[in-house]
Amino acid sequence: MRLGELLPEHGGMDASVSHLEVSGVTQDSRRVQPGDLYVAVRGQTFDGRCFVPEALRRGAVAVLAEDAPLDEVSVPWLTVPEVRSLLAPLAATLYDQPDRKMCLVGITGTNGKSTVATLVGRIMEAASRPTGVLGTLGYHFAGRSFGGASDNRGQRTTPEAAELYRILAAMWRQGAEAVAMEVSSHALELGRVVGIEFQVGVFTNLTHDHLDFHGDMERYFLAKCRLFDQLGEAGQAVICTDSEYGRRLAKQYPEALTFGRGGQVTVERESFDYSGMDLQLRTPRGALALTCPLLGSFNRDNVLAAVSVAEALQLPQAAIIEGLRLQSPLPGRLEPVQAGQPFPALVDYAHTPEALRAVLGSLRQLGEHRLAVVFGCGGGRDASKRRPMGLIAGQGADLPVATSDNPRNEDPEAILAMVEEGLELSGNTAYRSVVDRRQAIFEAVTKAVEEEGWAVLVAGKGHETVQILADRTEPFDDRLELAAAIRQALRQRAQESFESPSGGQDKGVNHGGA
Picture 1 (cartoon, rainbow, N blue to C red):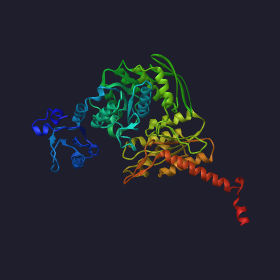
Picture 2: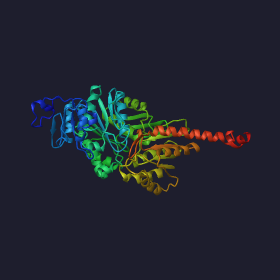
Picture 3: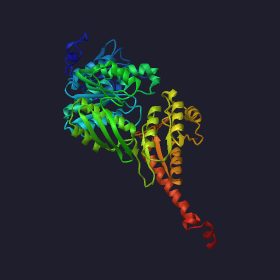
Picture 4: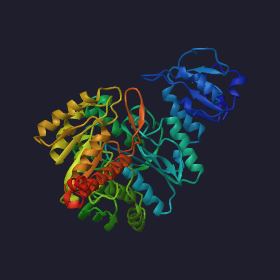
């Protein structure tokens, strides 16, 4: 598209500039492709003008900014009063409004967004509707990644507006008929989804998180509510009414499809074990019996959300049953780890108080095991949840092991001291505090290897593959670390057994024989 067509309101643009062809738009200099318009956004930490040289090296043909360039540039430089608000409309125009060509399902809430988006995608595919999925676990369609898979929580759950429209357009060109996407409160507050039209909007829950950004729960809730202002003319709100926040939202949208206890989609009978769940549901279209390999009662709530989306879209119930039956555990979402051990070992992304409470409660339902949980709280993030996390771990686990979780620029021991306040308040005197996360995992595993009847959960980082420290980022995948700790503890146990009298190899006899 010509720059003059993309920015018709920009005055003073001579013919040579207005006829310049632009093929893309982005505010991220690292993602610039030849022919792009680079939008230099001034953020809280960085000024986008500082990255203009990189954008030009990558092929940007023009720059849009609020202020004059820092240095001389060789491409057209256009200034406007406020650039961030232009990102979405510019991208929508340039990429020909892909959101209007597909069915978009937006999922918001503190917990469950990744799982619900994945389940919705699975059901849609079973209904022969090719569907992309965008969120914390990456941006995927038809086995292809469109970038954005996050190895740490610094990546975008919901991409910036320009990137979002680009991805939607690319998925549309590849044959996507629908997209299920996580919509974070940050994305709603910062305008990343401005102009996007959703056919279905989903509210899962609202619990303590991101208060360092929003300030309090009321503003956090109001940010989430913005999603439902962007429903299309025939758009459908799907709301969990198990919380006061959900009930408030449902009153604002009386035509909403509700799910949960007392909702229009609800559970009549359920059973859980380590193979998954069996559910008998009541829906507006009648009874629905299904199985799903996902573990725990909190995943039941995610299944209810996905079923409700399918009901809102009137998808065949056979597709609901088939899609959920085929769903395998999601990366880092109560994901089993097997390394030859005789006890359950799992990794989960739970990094908020309510998420940790839910996953511990779910594991209690799956068997009579005692629970060892390794957990922590990230640095540079909402510090007010650290004491509650410690209290919940102390109340819900038999052996809580507090440790580091992406301490970033904070002192890990200072973070743990705040967590320990909650642990002490819980009255659980068995807790341990171990700064080194690898050692903490090993101590929890060793307990389960030495004594029968334990289950081990490593919580907080889930699918992430790095540990973020003050001065460096190191590879660290809880799933790999848990498996390595199990193998090490089993070898150590076997060696001890071999060297003991009951193992048939007595140290004293050896020395005597020598």
